[in-house]
Length: 587
Ligand code: NDP
Image (cartoon, rainbow, N blue to C red; front, side, top):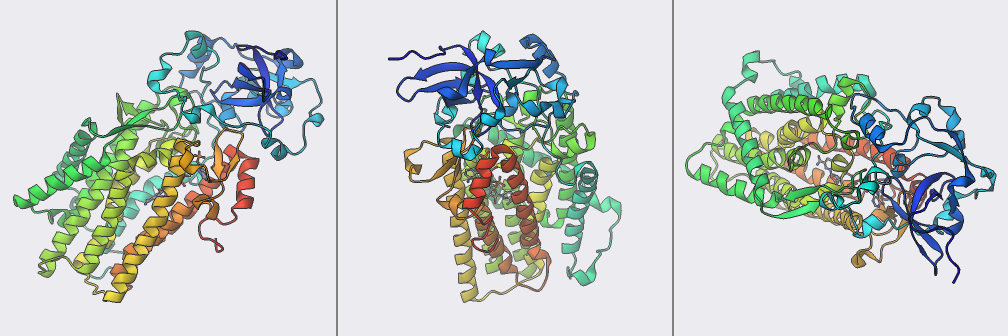
């Protein structure tokens, strides 16, 4: 049996699949039958490479070595959060890899950040012209995805030498392009979003909330403030925090971070909503008047806004002390305002208490249901009803189902953009604590003072619509979530996939082969079902639907560019195969 050229532990250059770039890798093993080397890149990605894509270090010429590679030095540099390291290269898994690109001369600024620049002695022209063709010839299994994951705990078992060398996390690379209109956009959104929410609440609280009554009369400033409302919101958040730390429910692992670690999350959201429901029901039974929420809606929103601003300031300050590997790629522009808005730290935690996860899933989301319930009670009181109207029941049940489903499948949020990519800053804090509870409840608020009788056939159509949307939404999200959690899950073996250079694959059949965002399609159908019970007399109950279309279109294009950058040619191939974005044959 021929002996392999390189032995376990050798440091060699490995070609990044689908590209002409070579990176320094460490050999972990060799399979004599398939003649594939298992190698590990500096970011922890493990791949199997063909023999001819593995070369000795001496086959490359060092152009410059602008920085010491001593781990100690790298660490001391990485601890400086204010330092903005710019690199214009792709920010896929390969960002964590020493780059070897003949074209690196282009940008002299790169000199500072690239540790080693090498170019193959052989002409690049010899490299296959069609990188996509190559992809089939690699085994792109990312072994970490197959269960041999590095958890926070498991990491502590690593050899010290490995921690400091091969597994060392390079400095953060703030290479994500600015979103939301960039720095000027951040100023705009910071002022616009709170004003918009307050405007909506003032507009809908009018007897006739139609556009004819635009703009609403501005009440005295003192009207916006109520200390009791602030106390009520704080109590609610503390109550939810208490439920979050109760050691009930599963400890789920998030997706691997850039460091290779996986954080653990207490996914007891369903428990939290059940306990909340019991406590609220007991309170109502004891005579607590929940219609207070309807009467003090504006003041409760202002109090939540204040809390979200204070939280964002805290998050920004603490992000200045976070290591580069703890920062999100998108929130490190160097502009204080943009970064404050977008969020810098990816997973801010106080011990095991994950602030982003908690805010995304608990006070606002469960608060949404509490507010809807309060609106049903307010409707009964205001209109002298013994029971809520059918439209109110539908809106309550539909949205309750959405929230309960989200909490039942809480683990699924761990593979969404918010959790995986976005830093925790004003955008998410405000979204979670103000936007969701106070604008998603507008339909219920509207129905309190604007009855809209619905015929039985229309009721049936609305229910069917909701169920269809929910089915598409749930099935597609679960399919991707299951695949991302365990790509080799035998239950998913019937699905076709495209390998990508990062080691992750893309689904090209099943729900994700139908359109590129089947989950958005389901969500939009559900949004339609939420607005229909309010009728067509006013625009405001349709606000959610209109906003949601804009949100999801923007989110889709944000995700498209993110995936294009991450997956390159594989993403292009996915888009050629799955041509429509959200609605089959339409869009
Ligand atoms: P997705 O859950 O759609 O996540 C997008 C990510 O999925 C991509 O970045 C990529 O990440 C991965 N992906 C994309 N295509 C494929 C594929 N073909 N195969 C495998 N993985 C793929 O996005 P969101 O986080 O925006 O949405 C999650 C859910 O939340 C949706 O149902 C959405 O409707 C809902 N939502 C609801 C909101 C509301 O206010 N009600 C607001 C926002 C979202 P990677 O490859 O890195 O895994």
